[in-house]
Image (cartoon, rainbow over all chains, first blue to last red; front, side, top):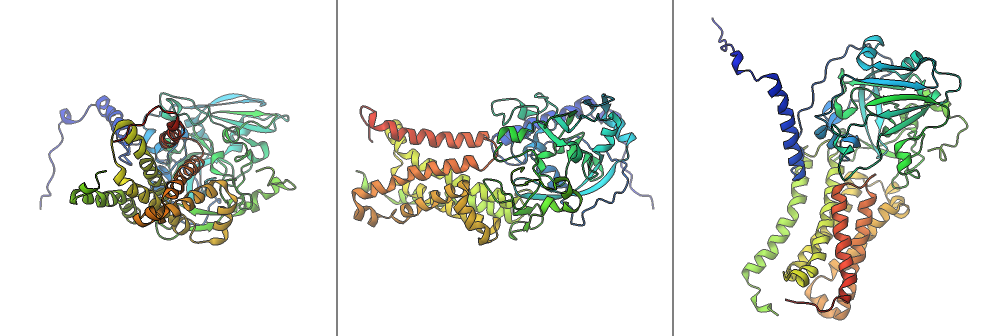
Length: 319
Length: 202
């Protein structure tokens, strides 16, 4: 029996690429208008993510994954706005490729590296990590990335290097949170780690999640993930990594030092001044009616791997 | 006074305010229960209820300046607006206790006692309780002049609620600035009002 075959589409009916690309601008505009009118979530079309080639890794949390939808629509990325849905709505114009990272400071071989070349050179592993936000919610996310150590080894840190400083891109034209009247913090967003924290095998530079390159709202094209620390340490869209001698500044600490420290290790016993850190709500786990509160684990459950980094340190004073 | 003219239309509008006023709570509850509030529905619902409590406080506080400055008299609806603010605050607190904190009193009570952010919000709610309880005609008659004095507590409650709202987030966003700005304006009006030359009443 002959199957029905749709007639071929005439080439003239296919939208030219330039016009088709403008669709996103239009959608962004409409989403912005909708948001301004308080019409609730209106998602702009997110730029396509591309599948990544990954190798398996032993670092896997055996807990149900947070859905990709939740991971990509519930974000803190103030460069795109301070609401949780703002980053997914407002990041449509951001261009994460081509992209280079400058690695400099106290290193033997300072260099500027292309992200896609890094992805081709260093094996990308799938790491399933817990993510605990300082706001007392959490997720389980399948990141794709490589140890930060692999990148630092390339530049050969000098003996005098004690800390690693990170910097996010500044692009007011593509990041609406960086322009206009309400700018929550000074740009660029900066973060830092002690060198031993940076070299720890759990510390990764993520270039993807759920097997595909990072969506813009999650910090495309490359971001830091330090699973035993509060989420704000995970600086996004990194353009510079510098090895330095003194403890570098970090944005939230600069903004509100009494509430956000440099270390920001997940610790159920050290409360945020405004709320308890003893429990957390796992996003997507309990829905609306179950309370879904679960106890927060010391070092977010990674105490076995990282507690020794802080032996003898007063974790209450060094929050 | 136009007490006689309170007809069927007025009483319909009176009830209409309650019905329309409670719609946001109903809509958001329905959205939350059916998965329409995003990744963290409890937080969204909780914050929305708090925001509407603040909005009805603002509307309640706006009645007097509207009457005196713009000649718009909404005095007969002020009770409904104030009670809506109270009920939204109660719902906000109830969601905090149940859906958010899961009735874990071991962490709730210390939070209310120790954390200024939560203490302030809770105090605002407590201050609204006597106002809601004395919002009936009998109380107004019984309390006489004291009724007006007692109900000035709404200024304190609104100020506490505004600070609570500012403390709820890590940075100030435009929505917050707009709401808190209105409260500051409406409270400031009470301060400058005695200094103004003549009051127009309608």
